[in-house]
Image 1: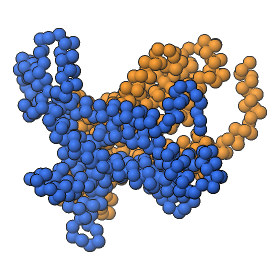
Image 2 (image 1 turned 90 degrees about the vertical axis):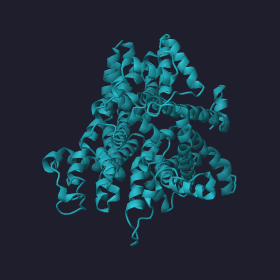
Image 3 (image 1 turned 180 degrees about the vertical axis):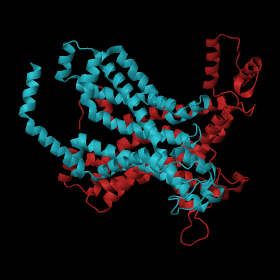
Image 4 (image 1 turned 120 degrees about the vertical axis):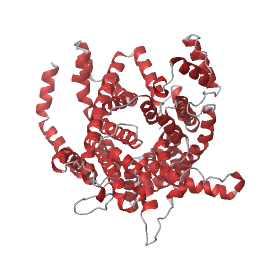
Length: 301
Length: 306
């Protein structure tokens, strides 16, 4: 009964969907900043993926070329061991991005599972979890990470996991309130009456209806993950590898700031990180505009 | 401890019990309670690295500097941000409004320590206007004050402190100013659209009166809560920036403790940071109740009066 009802709605509403699609396209293209952010992220991703083949890392040190200013051979100059900086920049974003995505995926999964189960079960369970989340939110995340890295040797993957677990509370609360507003909808009541499994409820009924909300939180989480990672790398608390945070750390430790020709060594990774985060922020804002028409009208008047 | 300092088990036990003044033969729960009761009284044990030095002394020596730089930065950024945010909300048709909003959204996106690095590069490294030296001599600006100076030097010492704190304070202020501008703009804009403001306009009240009586009072509400919340969280954010400017505050001390595996100091500082946040949250809740009588009414069951 419900199914046929839905089908007829979609059929008669074909024009409606077409209009909606056109509308979405108009919004996307009209939001120039969002578009810039999107292309920025795309460029960073493409460079990161192609870098190992196009700009291979300079692994040999060359004492004659230490701290060179930008030149034709070396687009951004050379570092304290005479290695090309541009190659490091091009290769340095890959791990950061990958870990940010992993963190975001894990944390969103945790958030969805807890955030949907808790209001569905309700009662004491919901109350206790909400209380725990409130307590958890008061724990300062970055100092805790720093302290943790004093107790354990964190590898990058473990860090992603810890970051995801640490940020469960905020996501849980957001998703919970979103689910609470969805809970009264007919289709959820129908699904509950059909006695469908919890898994089905969460991943087939609720999650698809929160995709806009989830994608917003996804970019937000990526941003937090990148901030925390780069901060820890910069403080030298994580194992060394080639990425922008480590570059910053090395440039700082090698005193690149006192060397006028080597300004690029420290400026380049700082710019790269800023651009990456900016692109995420702009995409986030564009998504917000896209999914929340109320905001849109608010801004235009 | 056993693995790191190469001590035997009994040595490590003796050391641990001395550091925390604990009786290790007592049941675990009793140890825990004696430890907690000491913590509450402000006794956090002694540092491993420098034996005999109490953790609470270290914290008391460092905390004022962090509070000074972080607090000044917070207040400055809030004042300027609220001012700019109000302007951009009221003058949405002026040419400078997109500049203010755009710049703030960019600045608020950049991580604070990168802002610090940019500041150092701009003021400390690059030489401007053909001068032979950069604008600020960063090598002589490490630490909280020039070594050897104290309160005996009076006004010079004060000036010295300000000079040394200048870059960290600017960094804190810049890192947050964008957020304040956007927050203030958002809350002012939404207040301007409220019916009671429209009504006040219709009654022909003066703009300045509408502004002070009707708009700013309501628009400042979220700012006040956010300010109280920030006070707690910002102590944690001082970690990287203090490392950057070698500013001897709580954050730098925590980092040193982590590098030296000085667990009592790590615990103590982390506890201080966390309790700051808890108290700030409590303060924010109380403040909101005082500033906005509607929340008190709402709790007793009446409707939102907006």
